[in-house]
Amino acid sequence: MTLDNHPNEKNPGEDQKQSFQTELDENNRAIKEVSLMLEQSRVELGKLSQRNAAITAHLQQVQKQLSTVSSEEIRMAYDSALDAQQRLFVMRGQLEKLQSDQTHLERYRSLLERLYEMSRSGKPVVKEREAIASLEMLVNAQEAERQRLSRQMHDGPAQALSNFILQTEIAMRLLDVDMEQARGELSALKASAMGTFQKVRNFIFELRPMMLDDLGMVPTIRRYAEIFKEQTEMDLSLTVTGTERRFEAYVEVMIFRALQELLGNAARHSLASLVKVQMDMADNQIKLIVDDNGKGFDPEIMTLEKSLGLRLIKERVELLGGSFMLDSTLGKGTRITLSVPID
Image (cartoon, rainbow, N blue to C red; front, side, top):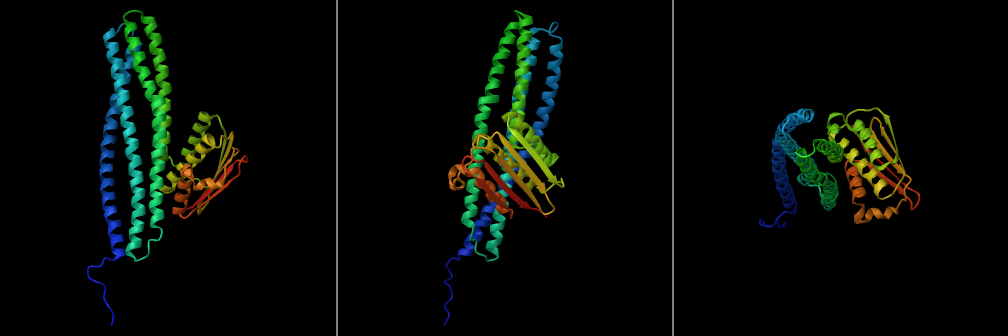
């Protein structure tokens, strides 16, 4: 005689499927909220950009007529310009943060959908722990990157903005005393602002280069290589072969982020002076090779927490069905090769 399962006994597969469904529902709600906030932020950014352009144009007119414009009007023009720049800077940062959150939530949804389909088909989700571990690693890597950028922003543009306020105060006081010296202070302020603006643009490019969406992976990588060379004074060569074309957005982002991480490692950790980057776009795969002459390291470091970036690249590449190879020896540099299949 066959005994049926107790009617109240829970089926582990059903529990797992329900768990994935619940998480998917929460994830979809979060994506909708972020998408709504993102749209609102884009509208607000457009308004702030227009306001900033109008104020900047007015300020330029004031600068041309310093001898005939009252000191009060000059003060108001500079105060308005400073306020507009700060608001625009904060809004752009908020927009970049929301875009990043949206991307990460969508990647998480893709993984959850795969796990849910596996649970529905009755297949054992044997890699569930590995998948969750990958998500945790992704979050940790994101937080580490945000902390790094936060420190850079605090030590760079944020500090510069404080100096701008001080320089503006000095110039405002000089307007009633020595117009010529005030012009000198304003000229110095303009030069400082231009330098800081370029730093902010570089930060934004690192966070999410808009040209990646507009022009694609190859032009973005070429531009990033130029900026990287300027910032690090490293001898970097980039060779691109194969048919240049657009790929799926997630593939382009993954390749770009991987190169970003590998170049950063070569500069910060390997202390390399020479880096060779080769990218080949064949009919069925994209292959990326980053070869540096740095101090190298023991490949076993991949198992340690501090190699989070490399492990994350490996996980992402393998998730797409690709391969990741690391060749490094202490004192003899590092060569990393990754390939991603494409349709």
